[in-house]
Amino acid sequence: MNKYFFALLLLPVCCLAQIPAYYNSINFSQTGNALKDQLAALITTTHTNELVYTPDVWNALKQSDLDPDNSANVFLIYGYDDSDANNDNDRTRSKNLSCHSSSCDGLWVREHIFPRSLGTPNLEFEGPGSDAHHLRAIDSDMNNSRGNNRYADGSGHSAVVQGNYFYPGDEWKGDIARMIMYMYLRYPTQCQALIVGTGAATYSTDMPNIFLEWNEEDPVSQYELTRNTVLQNMQGNRNPFIDNPYLATRIWNGPSAQDTWGILSSDDFSKTTVTVYPTLTSGVVNIINADTNTTYSLYNGLGQRVTISTTENTVDIGGNASGIYYLQINNPYYNQTFKIIKQ
Image: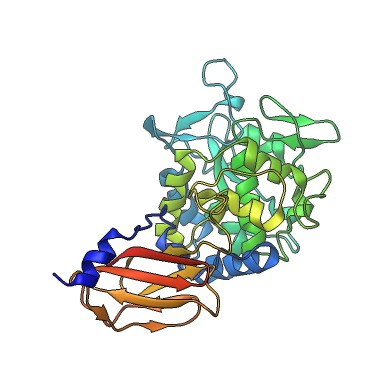
């Protein structure tokens, strides 16, 4: 066995939480507008299929909004009680009870989380008006109660609150915040968060405090994660704030939301520690927190150094055969080795 390879095995191999491959182009060492702009470009360029409002959106919601405990039903946004006599506040309903006529009592319709009429200009029924990342199944009467009221803070169940504003309910407020953040990034001039949210904007001048607070107070559910993937399969793009709510904290400040990747909020995410992703790749590996003094070396399973192409923040191993490799990163401040699997 090659002596260098034996020594290499003794080095610590860093196995960090996986950042999904969808985000390979993003430099997560950035914050504020720089990170916001990169994510906005990503969700725009990967939005390769625009759904037709009818029938595509109906079909999408009947798949994306399914109750994981009963796949015959869809969740109804803002709903909270399936057991009382009032069906206006139902939390779930048969996915087949969608309304396609003028009489919708007891049926569900499509809710624009960012109201069409509050868009600049009106969202209509194409483009942002048919983007399923902010469309949800809703009881028809609940839909009428919400109307185009702007969101405001509250507690408990959903309700129209003082000032003719609307509180979405404790269960749904995080979902609402993350959908509004997505719409702002995807349609920045047409869907400004300040137009649909009330209250102060002291954490950041372009994002109301309530959305950042709701994002932290109501963590992402498995339902949201599943919905995100269903809609990616239909539209091509994802909602980054569902994949990791802490992205909102890095962009707009405010309370520290959940870092579902366990990387961006860690003490190790600093200029003296690099982050490498993806570690399962067909070619390019991204390096976060590298600098001009950083050098890279790649070794195969026999300890032989192999050819790579590098920039300051990327290593391209695409010219090598499939298999396991060890990427050694050197800098005056650190010396780290990462296990990379070339597909």
